[in-house]
Length: 287
Image 1 (cartoon, rainbow, N blue to C red):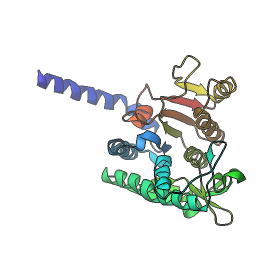
Image 2 (cartoon, rainbow, N blue to C red):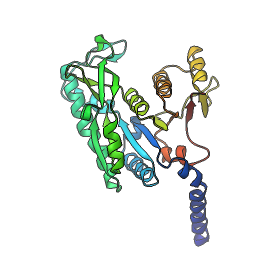
Image 3 (cartoon, one colour):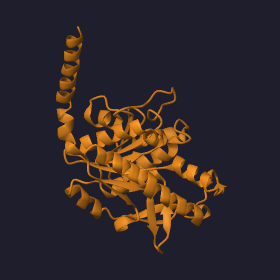
Image 4 (tube, one colour):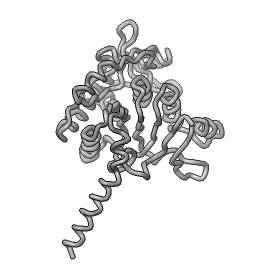
């Protein structure tokens, strides 16, 4: 009985691989930008699963780019160092002392943890921030928020060099100002700007929810940009989903083929989205 069950498991695995062939062919050579953050990067097990998926994606021909956040780790370190923050309309003011901590945590602790996880799975990852190789130039997003930046110029040439060397870029969302300042960038915003500059095939925004929900609470699996705008106008899309859908619309306007908002806590979420008929989360296209 046990042997028959095992045989059925292996047959199901083989069938899944066979059914994935059209999708493997579809994404061969594609650039996929993944925003990684939230609870998806919380546990060691989740990190290892994500890293394994990213390495698999590269092995079958995808050029993955990882852009990560790190808000909880930043908050933890600020509290440990007893650095208090001011807020404007619910957003943290980033002064020089806070920026020093932000850069230390994002470029150091968080970035290297992801790089090491990918390398342990047999990949070849390198850690960067938007300050490296003039990748991201910023202007102030809002003078009241201090050193919070809005990407204005992306130079992705170095990323193409890494693709050619089978290297996976892992990017901390920091940018350089026009006068040498360091700016903190919202992780979703940074991922969207990089995806647009690369004319990526997919931008995957890993979140802590299943996707975009309609008025009845059901996840909408496919949406157009016009539907997103309508759902935002009538209040169906609200709260923390608004900045994610705004990032999606900006990326699509910038040339990204499609954006997917999906639950990064689900095991193998990125593989389910790219390599199965069902997909995962909410896919947003221009039309």
